[in-house]
Length: 565
Image (tube, rainbow, N blue to C red; front, side, top):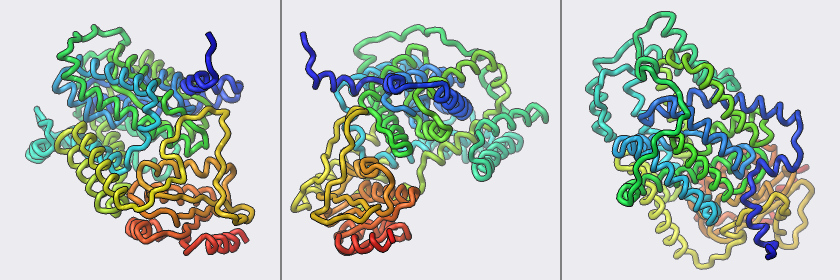
């Protein structure tokens, strides 16, 4: 029985990047760079894993175990060369709610079901479509999660005497406000000191592991000065890490039905965040990930994490970026990061008992601020009215109601808004394929389509977009520079065929302008129509000195010759 070449090509897209890298050749120098990068990421991940686990309503060892088991498998089986997996802030809200409503057994079963959903989604090639999430929805629920994380750390940050903090947002704030007179000066001092260390290191020594240094200094201060504050040792008495397989929870049809919404939310968050992280890695390195292979790896990792009693896991954008900046060459760096964390659990676990919870609250305060993406939120608040409504409704529902409801409503509203906009477009002709399938590493890079019969000056490249530029095609714009090879001196983007643009499209153009500026390239926008121009002006995209707007393509060519000269 023969296998067709198309079948072989299709299944080759599920080959892990680790296999690809080893096939290309991997030497001692590559291993040394991966070793350093893996150690660096492990240092960053250690305090984060513990803090996220505690914020999720469980014990710190569960966070590290998740980073070890899931982190290793995500790197070993994934479709990205640089992805770092583990527990992330996006899961804190849903994990806390699942444990509160269904117990830890419910979380284990939900994580396992989410893993199976992710494997199925990858095999069905849903990863090709999941990348096309509208930006207002993503920013809305991410900022909402950030607010919830920040509010959950107020008690430990200020040392408030509150026995039972309500789960609902506004009752929680009310209870915390009533408890303000019980503020513990020592605890607040530890938290404020740790926060100051993190912020100062980020400003003056950004390459140093600020989280770990802050936690170590806080623990040393509490021990040396005998500050009476809660630590991991006092909150979780007698806690010992273990990789023993827990008793598997009882499974029934009723239980599966009850947990399915939570499992779907976990799978959705894992899929979206992992592919966003992979896209960030692609933009930083010029590489290409395999989205469906990545989803399958995420599914396998979450199933394994559940079997070891761990938490849900996904690709972590900040840790992945740290991995790249540290010189990682392959997925082996991510695998080594998991090995280093395992070594810590086996050798140095008793030291964690001295870590003050106030210091971890400071760590999570910074994580929440980073997750909020306040600049992007402000930028989208200048987008068209419909995008602003999607953003605010998704954000509000995440904070006040439920993350699952927020995602469902946000996606539906974005789809309705899109259909309304499409009905306003008289002519719709896409210059780029709306849905781009995964391609192999050996696939040729597509060139930039010629713009008429014009001859471009040396060092100048151009791209022409035709049709409404909305969230469904916005992510494609970031791939344009990847296609043209070496960075140009001038990049012309002709928008004469774009009748309308939404917030996601405008954000994508802003990202392209910033990326060109980092590479020393000037950007010229030509033929911008009235609706896109108004959106760009409202969102401040045309305010900077890094972009020039001209009337037509001939004027863009003339301006490009000036800039090149």
